[in-house]
Image 1 (cartoon, rainbow, N blue to C red):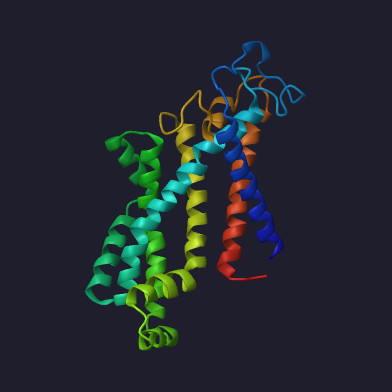
Image 2: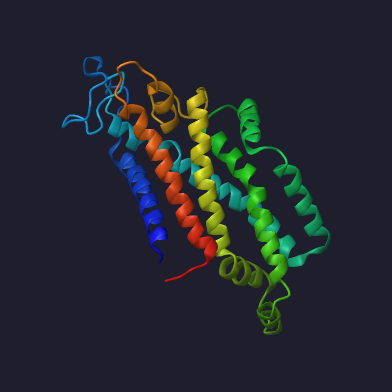
Length: 265
């Protein structure tokens, strides 16, 4: 494995570990408030200091992973459920079905993803589950079009013709030989892009406020929104989530790039 891929995978592993720790340990974001300890610098009491309400920045940073890791996984499931059956069948069979699916992908993909998410929030509410489902649907055209293009090029390949000649069922050819064997790296790359996209989406919505995770529950977006620019505040209260966002996106890009290049070993 290339060094860049190892670095990227290591970064993502740390983020997932933070998510698992947060789920197992929990963190009472209300009881943690202590105004007498506000804006303290790093120390033994708090590794990254405290914010303007005396809350431990490090533990809020760890707990904020819940705002996007789980929901991004849910969004990935939605994307797979929407994109793979449609693009898979269309790419394998071609014809009118392919034209109809590509038309639907074009129509859905023509709406900016952020607008689609906001529209879903306006109709169904701004809960995290709504944002996750909307993000998954919004990203489905990108994955679907990529899978369709790959399958269209492979459906007349020699190994597909050989599988048909040996009596392999069309469903096995599609789901195993084409989608799993030939497209899994492509699908994995798009799921990583979706992970990064959801992080930026959640951060943007958290910074705006009134969407998804809201105070006192932490997200990297609302940590930035509430801490940036506070006079005499602890600079790490906003710099830590900003760096966490940047490093996580870097890890996503490094890992996805390795999948794109198709290098092994």
